Image (cartoon, rainbow, N blue to C red; front, side, top):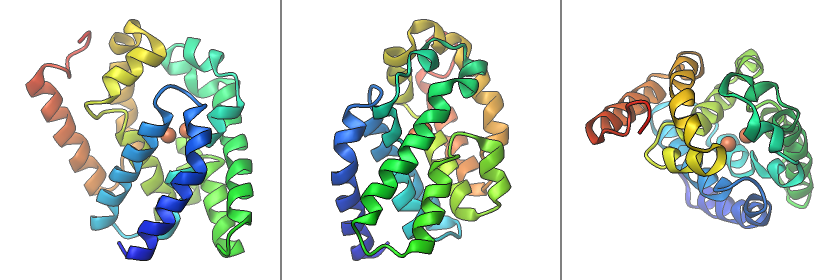
Length: 204
Ligand SMILES: [Fe+2]
Ligand SMILES: [Fe+2]
């Protein structure tokens, strides 16, 4: 990771922060964690680091522009069909375009970033892009569903029940979402940690 990519990331985060703070609970912290997972993946996996980091920094800004009640209320397996989930990707890409338009970020690379933001929560669409960067973004974003912070976040966002119902749904989803050896390894490490601390069992 080069120094200039670090300062680019910091600049992007400064632009994204006001939007992320107005989005869902912890969207800001989630973005910082997704960036950490992204960096960990980039250490081992091939991919254009600038595209991955830029996309992760901006990917969830769209939640600030949608009423996400339908997303919160939908059962785990129906969340991906909610209007607000789709709309946060559309709005996120619009906001990201506004930000990147003020920079010398090259147009063709900008379009790649916006394309990933516009489908980052649709695993089938991400995989159909068949780009390592799109996959790494999805993996980094979704690894944060399994980390130690995720339980507190889900409790805040969806309530206690989700911790019971959502767990098996997430574990099933993991088989589709995580494709690189590094993402699979990080996931297994986190699941192992959770089991040791007792947080991995349903209902905790
Ligand atoms: Fe998202
Ligand atoms: Fe996200």
